[in-house]
Image (cartoon, rainbow, N blue to C red; front, side, top):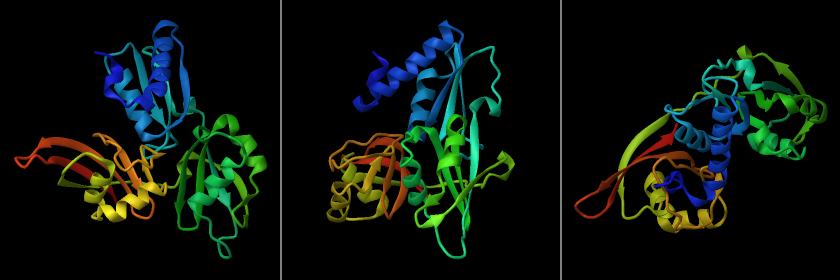
Length: 257
């Protein structure tokens, strides 16, 4: 039995990376700071390193409620502090009375800098207040080069962690049954949509599994998968609880509120 059998083939390269980080912490007593990881990557790292390893693992993305977080993999003697994660919080100042800025506008401007997504954490918005989390090593570059987001002229400023916008998320837990664990069937149950409506959404790149677009309607979903459908929100397949007498799968899922 190998560790790979518990994961999808497309996740193997990330698993290899986590195993390398783990070995370096255990054998070289080194500390590894990663880029920002999405929740699925955090789950994988936690499962691989776990509690029985000689290496330890900790996450931080600016706050306890952050979704995207940097990971520290370290030998047992090391005691990490928030400053060790090298996270910067940048607030976007813009004329909110005259123009609005959306999450996708911010992400588009950041990607236009030519910096990979892993260097950025959450993008937070509460009314007119807008903040983004960035890796400390690229924060100066971002401050100097982002002066426009969408149609708005902007100015970015550093703020302290105590000024971070709070954005807690919670899932409404539900249960249901599905005839199969195909992506289109599961999404139909979760979002109460017919498969004739779900399939075009998948095929037009509006569906993500674990933050990655898939256009395959028959894609097999697994417990722990994060799902999102543009225009319908995000969900998570919490558990697969076996089959009913009618040979259907019992599933538990959460819908982000």
